Every structure is written in C-alpha cells, then in structure tokens.
Length: 331
Ligand SMILES: [Zn+2]
Image (cartoon, rainbow, N blue to C red):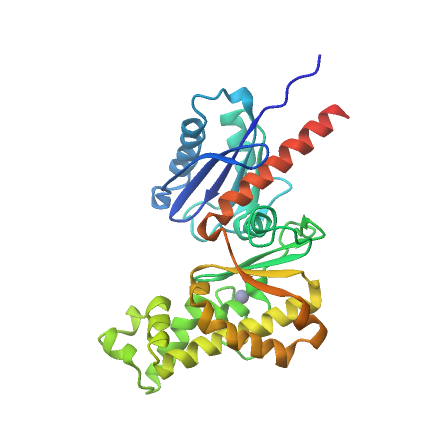
C-alpha cells in the first residue's frame, strides 16, 4: 500500500534576537507564521525547548504525521550534511550542537539545518527578487556581511557546507581588522559595523560632521542608521563614509561577477536601506573594476523578502528535504 505523503513543512529562522517559525504547504505557501523572542541569554537548552514548543504550537491542530520535514536556519557555521551547528556567535554558550539529532529525537520528524544567509539566498531564488534566475548571488549587509550562492538552481555548499562566506573575502591587504581575525575583509570594509568604525575613526582624527552634535560627542553612540540619515541630509563626512563602504562592496561584487557570472545579485540587510546612496558608487566601482561584459549583464536588485529571508529559505529547504527523503524511500 502506498503511503500518502505528508502535506506540510515547517521552516524556522533561529536568530540571535528573534525566532521566526512558518507552517507552509508543500508548494511553499505560508499557512501561518509566528515571531517570538529567542531569549538566547537563557542558554542553549531553553532555546531548544522553545523551538520544540513553537513547532507544536504552529502545527496545532494538524497532526504530526502530516508534517513532512522541519528545517532550521542558523546564524553561524553549520555542517548541513549532518545537521551540526558550530559555535554560533550570537547564541551564547551553544558550542558545537548536533541540532538535527536533538530535534529529531524530540519531534520524530526529519530535521535539516542550514546557514541563515545561505538559506536567504535560496529563498530569494525560489520566492523573492531572484525568481526565474538560475545563477544568483545574495549578500546581506547588516552588522556583518553574509551571503549565499545559487549555482545552476542549486545552493552552493562546498565540500563541508562552508561555501559563500562572501563577507570574508579580502578586499584590501592592509585594510582594517575583521571579526574573523583577517585584515581588509569585505565585512571590515562595507558592513554596518565597518561604516560606524570608519566614521568614528574619521571623527577621532578631527573631521567635522553633524554627527558629533547628534551623538553629543559619544562615539560609542554612532549607529549606521544615523550615519545614513546624516548622509541623506548632505553631511559630507557621512556621505564620504557611505561611499567608502559602497566602493568596497562594488569591488566585492566585481570579484563575485568574475567568479560566478550570476544572472542577478540580490542585496539585503539593514544597510541596503541606504540603496540610493550606495548604488551610484557601487556602479562606479563596477565600471572601474569589472570586465565590461560582466558589469553590463548582471542585474543588481534589492532583496524582496527582507528579514523573512531565513524563514522562507528554511521552508524551501524543508520542501526539498521532504521530496528527497520520499524519493529515496520509493527507490
Ligand atoms: Zn573576515
């Protein structure tokens, strides 16, 4: 007798601040979703318990046998083949966690795990700004820089699942120190943190700016958002710093175009809200740094899914995992 396939999947975006959970059908239509605080400071076991409760809550009143798979997007390095999470920086005290096994024991359904920026790339490809493109590069510009690459319709994982660490490609051999320990990474020269650090450095060296007034001289109060606002109001220092970051991003995009020849590059994350300030300089960097034929054909667009990218990507991964497991069982 042929079993009926289960009709639902759950995608979870496990963020350092928020836990986003979506129940979807097998076509990727979201039936309902919830956003709750992660409360990461309560530690690993509390967060794992919260994930299990959220899965049961969002599924109710649907029976667990009608749930085909659960996927979790994690903010840090993962081994997607074995479902292991390696010391996510925004989840204190986690260490290395066999997330797949732990959740499968609790939920008794197949669980898969992916990196959140990788899954956001998959989400933009499947449901967002990159629909219809077979070759896509996704970059998230927030406090740091993450990314994901879809090559010929498939998420590029690398041999160990660590591919597409776009934020840690070197842009300047002698650039500022990066959170990873290297110097001059894209993340150290174009992220939200890089923008605030560079503005602080220039103010410390005596540059005048409306920002010094706005933050009452307290450099620790500098935020990307207020630097962007100052740039919109014509503050020369703020404009210079945004253009400094945008040029480095453009250099990074030229590298990515030459390596992956994508149809489309999708840019998301909070810093991308400064789109109109960033784009002219990004385009200038591409004219100066990319071979002409590449610079002309790749579209550069804003993310459509925003903060929901990880959650939608987890839904996509859960759908793919369910299909793979059913095909394997049938073979
Ligand atoms: Zn780095």
